[in-house]
Length: 516
Ligand code: XMP
Image (cartoon, rainbow, N blue to C red; front, top):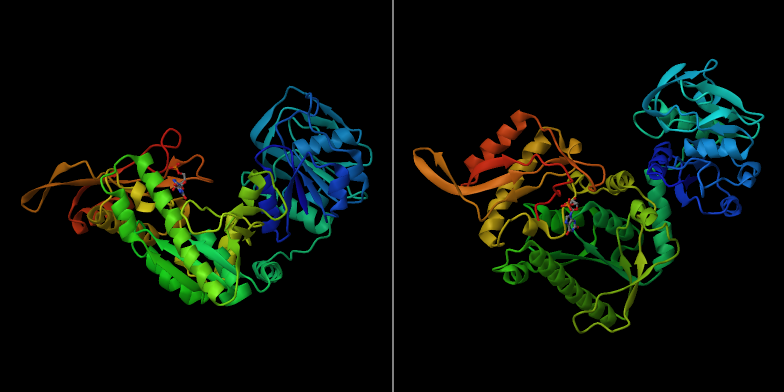
């Protein structure tokens, strides 16, 4: 089914809720003409909310054609008003705004779209205009204080609308409303399951790659691991995975890739042990931007060297590497304009050796998936929980969590402290409450402490637990004091060079998640 995006931030959320109801959904922009939406033959359409008033100049409208094509349609908030407006109902600027938690009352025993929901339910609203009269043929199913028509339905034409946002968690019965639309209104069955996703993708990858070979860079993160595992399942040893070990990973992470990933997938793995190269390049550098540039540059070079070796090996065997696997996710696709069609990227070739015109075709098996679906697919493919549930970790790794020069001994100190913090967070069962929890070593700062009978002069670390939806904004996580105390006690006891543990209580903005 299709979710038409009217420009608010809700379209992706709607698509996710629909998928949670096990129906496959895609987001399309509202600029897509009705004729094109119809020609795609969606099983159902949801019109999202949006920031406009239907009377505003240039406000996106919905062509009546869409409602006459026999496709079940649910309008939400702006989509609801646009539907009413387009079909001859009345939408007025009543002056009564409703914003946030709003009570909605069913006009009758809840049925149809509201089947199984309470006669009086809490919803989340955000509107200035209101539908004051439903179009002909529609039954008014619910009202609120400021919305004389808060929900309507025309069962004959299978057209439905709600003023509130059923997709947000603040509308506790919203998922039921969405499911009523999908299952009852549109007659769909819940078939979009993780097993089906894997089956479909495996078939698609085999079709795309054929007999050619592919390579995939593993970062240690969820997306590249799941993408690689899917491709491995599809084409087996035609895939070579590349792991550049830059030595800036946390404790156990390189092993997770080198041992656990391979054990779980049977993938062919090329390990480039580049720890020395990165440390040498980073020697004497304290400036964050410079560190990032060096790490990025060395990474590309190391990857290309590995790539070249793999290409040569393949050539010697009479095969050709034509594909590069990437773990692109659906939100990236939507945010970059939802472009379809096969993207082609040029491989970097800032070091000699690769032919100028070398191009890989991309294999992006996660292009249609949201992060939670990627995790589910990873679990289905047998990847260990440590990989599938991993918090985000930046490409430059611990290199940007050591404030000051990066050295092997500093990396060891930070690794030890970080491992304790992660272990205790997991132990407390709060992993899922926290987006990520960087531990930062203030390597150039020293402070005085006392331990046993002696004076110490060690380094502080900073705990930076944050909660976030998408890393664009974040708040510091209010972790229990007991947990913080345990982490602090263990780090100062077990990591000799650290004599102080501090907590970062800055939101983003103004602070970023990482310190560099
Ligand atoms: P900031 O520090 O900008 O981080 O609030 C936002 C998110 O991005 C991660 N991050 C990176 N990820 N390469 C990456 O792959 C990078 O250079 C990088 N820098 C920051 C950070 O961990 C957080 O999740």
